Image (tube, rainbow, N blue to C red; front, side):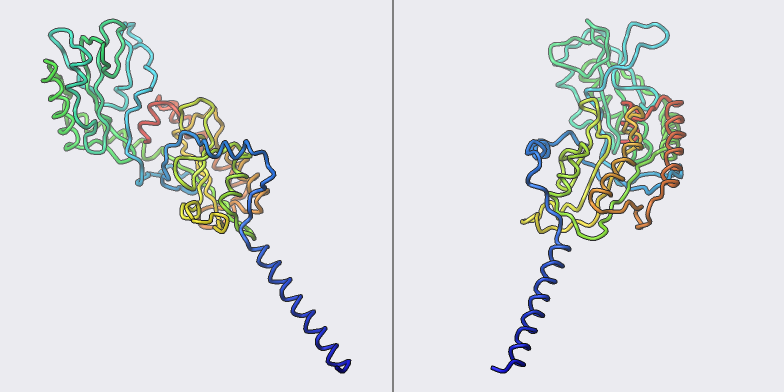
Length: 369
């Protein structure tokens, strides 16, 4: 074999090795980042356990706040049976309010001739607690405690009240929904031997429209998009990095939540990625190129400082994951833009406070639910 042949063979081998090395490097560079298996295993346990989650993807409203956001793809609202009772009326009456509140509910008193047992009330409850898209609730005045509460077995009640919510994120209470509420409440009243007193329908529907107008112009659901600059991320990598910021697994695949300080309250923030990537047969091969960090403003108390934490977490994730924080159109979000959003939010919080609908309160969560 001549020296030229040997030289060409060596050169060909070097070229082939270089091509293989480049392809290997390129494949590794573009492969989804995987979690560090050496991290504390307790972190993985937190992901498995998960946390309370409203499960809503919600309507994404890009920064900043224009005061005219009205969400349309929303969860169907429900009365929260665990809401704490409202403070006693200023008039000094001994009866304490339950979940129903005249600020956001139509309330129809139901007078009784005598005492009704909780078992009888439960048997008379409507089959469904909805009037169209609005939640319906019935509360009894406990003979012993003087509290308005959802009827319970073994208790005795000297009066009842039925209520339907005036507005939520599906819109204002309309005439058809009001009529359905009247039918349900009348059926309950007849069953327990009570006499309902319904407010004038047109007055209540008008009040519902006014409340809906206020709510629709003071709603805000913010979202930042974190986009990968180079290598994509695997679901395990996203979960691991998110867990370091306090996120835990949500109820839906591809969703993590940052729990509130008080158990049972809605999460402070959501972190979501492609559901199909989370459900893939081999998640390690799923390539995620963007995450959505979200805040449902009326659902989170101001004291949680949700927007400040949202900014901080977005910056940290971008740094650790080699990503870029953008709006929904892919435009980078600058610090001065963030400052403007923060100032708008402070004004929104003040407005909600002035209407007794403070962000994170039970009433705000119902109205903006």
